[in-house]
Length: 502
Image (cartoon, rainbow, N blue to C red):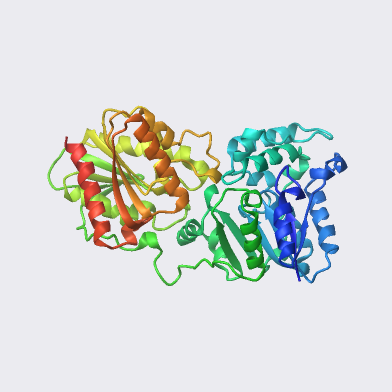
């Protein structure tokens, strides 16, 4: 008989797992929702010395008293840190560790590092630092729970109960650095990804394809993944489905990511059009693909997505998609500029925006470029960078294009209060021509941001042309070598260049 130890996240207690535990027990499994010291109905037990070590010991004691040969320990949100600590103390008892919509904890990080929203994380950090003696870190207000993760799918009454039963957190349980036990190596793990919160198997596979060594461990056959079409609180929004996933994880099921050792990852496969090479000049982070003749020519600056690991090779300006578009526009009489901006992490959007702005000025100042006729073309996660130009488009910006873009921060990206929200900023775009290429097989979490953008654009009368690729995937230019995909690229390029020549 499998036993499940269910570890709650920050400010919550075992009560949050009640429905999931009931369904696990109905299936014949044992279920032990844990309430850690200082939380839930054990909030009165905390003292000045309550820290992460206290919570780890809580779980060790629980595991020791479970009368079952195998224990699956599941951690939600910040609770995964204590779960990992306990599993490292009792590895011989652990059959599997399940991450329920939580990132992988890094050695030396405190539980607070797993809070995605930067504003909330900073506030909690300050509150914890100022908490002397027995003072606690207050739980979020009712309208702030989404900062821990999307509340999509959570019934109103369940959200109200979350707010009612949440407890102030002992500060040291959030700030004490966590040392990843070596004894965890080799233990099977499962990730439960909540797509409405911004996570998906496809997204992880794409990250693995970049070759970042930090993520290669995710291709281990002992690591499996499941998706749930809900927000960050699946134990409240879909307890039946979560219980089923936990049972299947215990049985060793789950999607396996594939390493890309024997084949080129999707972003390095050939461009769907056979575009002749053009003269190319490299200046700093920018490559200029040049037309025939003397100019001055209009220019299209192509902005890649990401985040892309800093040591990824080749860098984005040498990727077939960007090179393909740059050569294509150069062959039609416009400079194609590709730029390596430094979006290496979700916290890098500000720096990446500065890089793009510098690249645009470099292109505009080139004597072969007509600096008053420029288009910017954003791809994938680079779409958020368009927010800087939408509220008050400069006169030299004749067109803004976006292809399979992310147009609002995903809930678990921690950018809720940032300026990088094109779906909000489009209300200031006026009649700036916007050419948006939308793929029909988009990842749901990204498709939702596109629809949010288009709804806002329609409400304010923005000048948006949508080019649909009904059977296209994200990054379709190197994946879908179909006539439909080729026509979409050709139409988008003609449209952008047409606005530059008007």
